Amino acid sequence: GGESASEANPFAGDRLFNTPSDADGLERSFIATRAVLRPSSGSSIGFVATRGGGRSGDHSLLGFDIDQSIGGQRVQAWVQHSMGDSGGLEAQTDRSAVGASIGGTVGSIEYGVAWRRLGDGFDSGLGNVGSVGSHAMLGRMGWSVPLDGLGFLKSWKFGIRTRVDTDLEFDPRAIDLVIDAARFLTVSGDQMSFGIEQKHRTRSEADRITEDQQERFRVGIDTNPNRPLRLGGSVAFGDPAGVIATAWQGAARWRAAPGIDLGGAIALDERIDGIAAG
Image (tube, rainbow, N blue to C red):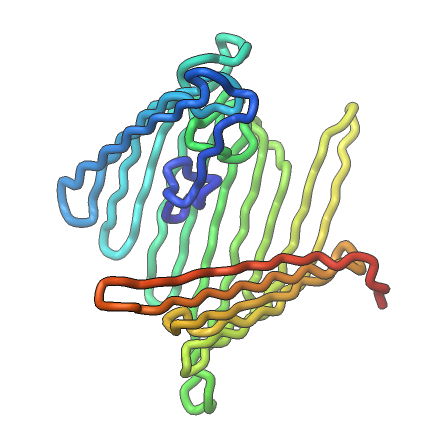
């Protein structure tokens, strides 16, 4: 997926496909063909074709993508087009999707920028890809500062991520800003973090525009991911007042024999409402 995260890039490999519950016959069959040509090191050209898999009816799909690494920078671009049953959509409905991204490292700064456009009639057989009839612009930047001589701390990382969603005329719908104000890496590989998340939503209803803005704070800790037993958790609080969200994860792996690894993972999310504020 690179900079085009799963919602921005329909080719991302960590997305799941779900057959519509009301589908029958061939609509329950999902066939996907993926081919990748690698003409040189750090370069690839891909092709994908699917049969079935739309939210309703047959929304087969055809798409191409390119991936190129140049001097430590990664450039990606992709295009898709929904085919098959139009599901009652008008013939002139835009059923295409396109996106591009670039990311890499410049000196001590890591960066990434991505953009994607989904036509108002796009329905991917590869699963949900976000709101159709929209643009999404994503960006991130971060850097690390060594903390030599400060005991158990190894480095301090600072980062910022932002996302802007608009309609096809570029009128804003949502603006998200995530600030990793402090992410401390210890000499043992564990991480402690503190961040701020801001969300701004704009809605148009009955010729009236409403706006909603939230700001939340997050504190978390994660153990070294290379350990056989990994633990992590975070607590988020802020707007709306009196609402606290917690997330906990755990994973374990065991090498039973050379070439045989056994493992398992568990995750728990909990939201606590009604806590008195102030």
